[in-house]
Image 1 (cartoon, rainbow, N blue to C red):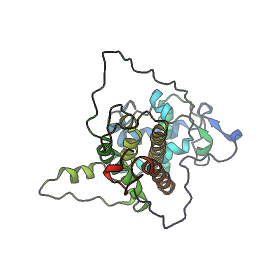
Image 2 (cartoon, rainbow, N blue to C red):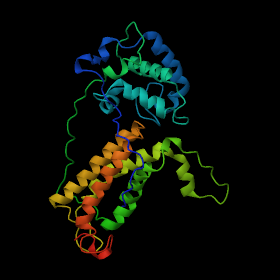
Image 3 (tube, rainbow, N blue to C red):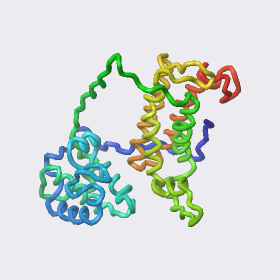
Length: 304
């Protein structure tokens, strides 16, 4: 993939920066919102959010907003990040339409529904960066049981086909953020005829949603890139057991996970740096397993 040189020298900004000193951090158990604020948030939630997230915040089309899964996703992160996400990405059918005050009121209702106690004062903008959601410690999932009589189906495609199917198109979606802000793209009208499923699909998950999905696709590609028995384009077995191959796959996944976090935060500025990291992750592997000893991308040289 060709490196694009950014035309502006912007420093990547983290989505959830903590301000102040660690001693200033506050816990949700201290009563950081008021009952009145949560009541206003409840009214908004029923009108704008319940259809996707459920009347009990259990999650339907959208993810749950209470319980272990929600707390795990937001573990140890400042409350400002949650308010940012609501304001920039919700509601699903009209993202960015909620004011900062409304987003904060919705957050207060989420906290109330999650059994965090109310206080006397409203949750304020100044307090948001200092209030941190509880840290949830998660244990590694147990390994799937295996037996001598159980085997995975053989890979369908070779490594080049897999890269073209998953890595190439989804990486390009992330690279394209150097050129276009996904939060500022006009909605494309769907041609009346003839019907085109690809064009229609692009209108269902546009903008930042497409970036979210591209990052997830890359992050979840590791098991496929490490599947035993997969062949390279030159017919040799893919080097899935080699330490450097595993390192290159891990580097790709790390960048993809970073991209997913920043995409979820709708942090457009961060993708200048992410594009550089992604380009490096791809190039480091390509120069060893794709381009060495031949022209760039030549089939004979793929997987030395």
